[in-house]
Image (cartoon, rainbow, N blue to C red; front, side, top):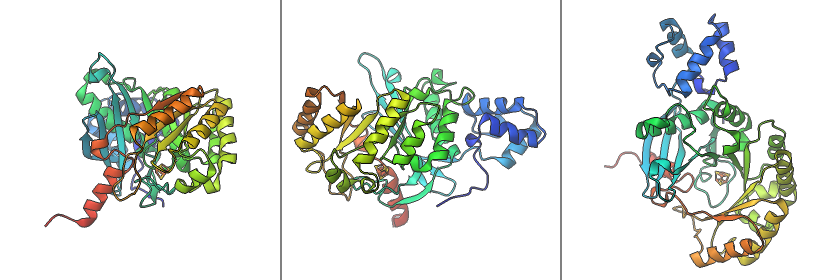
Length: 372
Ligand code: SF4
C-alpha cells in the first residue's frame, strides 16, 4: 500500500533533484548545497535555524517540503548498550531504528564500534515464521526521506551525547539495512536513500560500510549486482537445505537455493566482496549438526562469511534458542571446515530487540487503548 504525504520529505531529495526544484522556483543553484548542509552537517530540525537562507526561501521550503518525516516516540537503552528508537511517521505508522554499540576492550563507550540498523518498510510481506516484523504483514514502503531521516534521528541523539561526533557520520562504523521490511522490495527508495547517505553533499558514509540484508529476492540481487556503487550484501539464509529453509521462510518456495546461490555468486564476483550468510539458530529447526555441515559446504563454495545469531524469543511465537553447547558445536563444525564465522552475542535482549518487537508491543498497547 502506498502512502502519499501532504509534502515530500526534504531528506529524500538529492543535490540534482533539489537543484531542479529550486531552479523552477527561480532560486540560484548554490542554494541546494546550503540547504543540504543544514540537513546533513547541522541536522537542522527547524526552518528558522537556516539563517543563511532568505526568509522567503525558508517560507517556500516550509510550504513545499516536510522537514521532520519521523518523530521520536520512545527511546529504550538496554544494559548491553543497544539503543532502540521507536519512530512515528506522518500516517502514525511505527518503525524501529537501532543503534548497537560494541564496546572495545580498554576504551569507553564513546569509542565503541557503532552500527546503525535501519528499516525500509512498515511491516513486512515475507512472512518468515520466526519474525515479529512480519506478523501483521506489510503496511507500506518507506519513502527515501523516511529511510534517511532515521539516520538523522540517531545522529541527533549522538550529537547530544558526544558533540565532537557532529558534522558527519564518520563516528559510526556501519549501517545495516536489516530492520523492519524486505529492503529489495522497496528497491528504488532504498537506492535513492543510500545514494544520499553515501554522497559527499549528504551524510558522506562509505558504501563499503553499508550492508543490505535480503531474505533472497533473486531478481533484485542480480539488479543490485549491476549497480555501479558496491554496497555490501548479507543474505538471510537460516536454512542450509530447501527442506529446512522452506519451513521457516516462505520466500524459499519462490526462489529456492538452486536459484539463490548462483545469484549470490554473481553479486560476489561483480563486486569482489565477501557476502555474509545470516543464520538465526532456532532449536530443533535448523540447529542440527547436518545443517552445520551443509552450511559449511555452501559458505566454502561461495567464499562467504557466516554470521550465526542465536534466536531471540518473540512473545507469542513458539521458537527457542539452542543451548550454548549446541551453538558452540555448530560453530566448531564451520571453523573446522575453514569457514569464516562469527557467533553474534545478541544485543538488546532486555528491550525487545528482536526485529519488530518494540513496535508490535506499542501497537498492541495503542489498540487496547488507555488503561482504565
Ligand atoms: S526476517 Fe526480515 S524479511 Fe523475514 S519477515 Fe522479518 S523483516 Fe521480513
